[in-house]
Length: 415
Image (cartoon, rainbow, N blue to C red; front, side, top):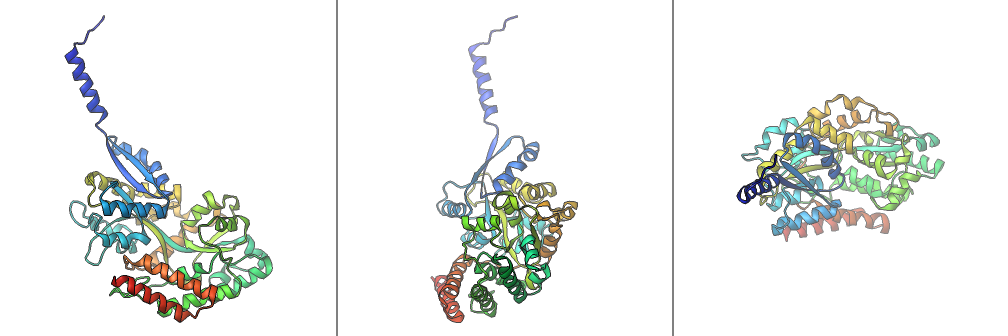
């Protein structure tokens, strides 16, 4: 039987088809690697909940991403619906006023605070109570080390993390016995030390009144340790995240690296996958605890699809299954406490010689205090790194170098 459709009916059908084709909403999510993989893995579960909402992911290298987001917020152009913010940049974005205040209705993000590891919300909350991002993952500071190199040198894990002096003494034994350096850069020990054992409410570079504190004993001691490491020939003088840095781990020319727990995922997936089974993880020296890295998801204040953007952020951050899937996929250590209580944490990590490293990181995360962030943190970090270079490379006096850094920071803050 043949049916003929009138021109008017055909027009109606075409109109309905076009409307159906346009029914889906698309959220643009701006991230940096490997968060793009995290979101890709989460999309099947998201589409089951929201089949009419598509996700378009835009990913740039971490520095390029944050520069692009700074420009987008300043110009209100090319704004994503959701943006990832690494914790080192959170202070700058929080003070800029370009992000939605998630503490207010309809978000009321504060209701979720007790569900997350306690220090995370403080990092994304301004002094006047504005919440600019939801925590997704964290970076408990840890000491990765090559067990095969330590064994050759007759050095134990306890020798590494008993104290800072013991760590350097172990490095001397390792260097003498194997030729391997203790650390890639003297900056490694400085970066961890200044973050270790901060008190509740402290800032890394600024006090509660916003004054720089880089001439304090904490920085002096960090510089002394870094200078001692250089004078003893224990650092390879390699720039972090350079090709040479990655090669040092592949070839075993560097024996330890202090960083966030997430480094384990980078080592196993792309930096040095062939070294599987040779690495171990331990607590930082001197029973220190430090936060090193972490991610938040935020909504630009001038974004146009805020309700659905908030649903997607909650999907990524407040669901145990999503957080665990991300940890399994890209080693993004979950900020959600419920995810940390999963039995997965007690499973051995094959890359780390079947060590139950996740339990070490979970315990470390529970000891990390809530610290304040400043929009000038990156300015201060650059000044401190420059000062350290002068000390270790040019033998500039520590107090002199730190005072110059403090003056530079104070000048930038006053401008």
